[in-house]
Amino acid sequence: MRVYGAKQQRNKLVRPKKSDLGLKKAPADYHSVKRFLTNECADADYLILAVDMLLYGGVVPSRLHYLSQEEIFSRVDFIKTLKENNPKLKIFAFSLVMHCPTYSSGDEEPDYYEKYGKQIFRYGVNEHKYIENLITKDEYEAEKSRLNVPEKYLNDYLSRRKENLAALFRTLKLVGGSIDEFLILQDDSNPYGFTALDQRKVKEFTKKEEKNIEVHSGADEGGLTLLARILTKIKGYTPKICPIYPKEECKNVIPLFEDKEVYKSIEAQIESAGASLSDEKDSEIYLFCNLPVGKMQNIDNLKGRQYDERDCRL
Image 1 (cartoon, helix red, strand yellow):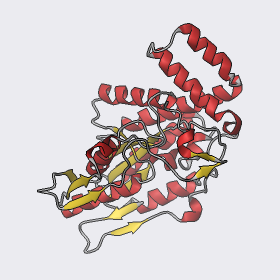
Image 2 (cartoon, rainbow, N blue to C red; image 1 turned 90 degrees about the vertical axis):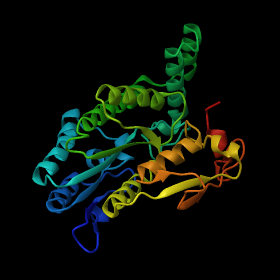
Image 3 (cartoon, rainbow, N blue to C red; image 1 turned 90 degrees about the horizontal axis):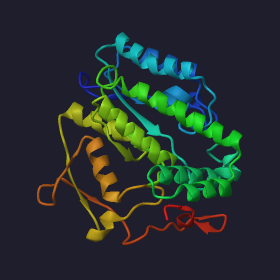
Image 4 (cartoon, one colour; image 1 turned 120 degrees about the vertical axis):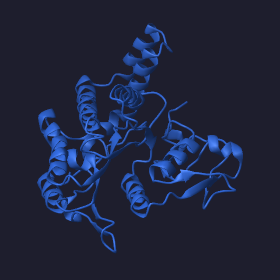
């Protein structure tokens, strides 16, 4: 999506045609997306770029693709072309660290995840805990044997994670140059496993490259978060927001499928949107956060089980 900005009386937002953006496992048409960006960014002020859409055709296709690394890298480098064609264009981009669901379902994952998803997740937890010296070698080997994930599926899954991580690193190198501002967002996550290991690699890479970029939860709202940030810049206004919790201990609830206390995600979202944290006295906006005390629950059933029963943190 591109934004025409401050020089006009009204800000104009332009988006690609919905029919060009794919649907769930069907990826967006890359050539249509590229053509849209080439044409529309020629005289735009801002670009909100979903990197996973550009590289893979969407978040779900990013977990399924068989693109070569050469092809993926060429798509990353297209971002530089956009900036070269319009040096005044400010590119606000976001990308995800590939998740690793705790449960077995092929709905948004490779087909083999329907049968082996939970085992693949547990395999990652086992790897992570062994790296951290939290389990012995005997325990590690026993768990690997028990999980018994077919090698061809595990190799397919891990090779895609490796390729996507390399693409994220290549994109991060553009931050501060072609890319003006960047968010790294996390979909489903967990304290241990493949996703947590990748998060660590990302943090190590950003530190090495001296990029001041944090990883935080909130994959679905990435585009709107950046739109809010752009609007605060156009208006020259930083809203002061104070989160309000039912009880103080509610701040420390860890949401299902996340790996940190909820207050950390809320504060990161506020700042990512171009606002600032404030106390109640000085705040312009109160953000009321409806959260439980203790473990979060979800009333939706999945095959007769509660969502919290799918959460393998414990």
